[in-house]
Image 1 (cartoon, rainbow, N blue to C red):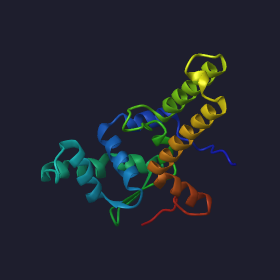
Image 2: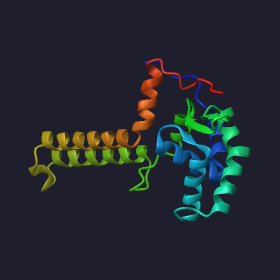
Image 3: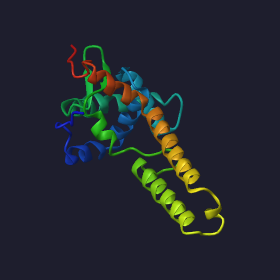
Length: 186
């Protein structure tokens, strides 16, 4: 396994995430998982900002302008996206994952993945220790069964995380097989 040495520094990630519109654009791009036009992204971000579908034209235009003039060039410069000005298309790039690591949240629960895994680990260990120490009710269940249930919970959480991050995972696999997400178009 090869460790990456070209990870974006935390300061740059914080600068990227400091702007709400940029965060929304990255969130929308991550959800799409492929190539999107600037107009499509503008409509998605404007819809998220206004809560309207379709969003008002004035808002779409405002989002479009700020994306083209400010946010997309900055994200491209840092290697977070590939932005083809000729075709007006955008795609996540090599440093998108570096930024995503700072924003990973289990949406339905509102905690980060690391918090979820820590909670599962602590709860599993606590229940297992309670069973081994003879705590009533808990000790009635076989510790091997409790351990198996805990491992199953970890497996389900991992599978769910992989599923919701599937586009990023597939992109990373493509890069590992000689794909060219770092290519320059236009």
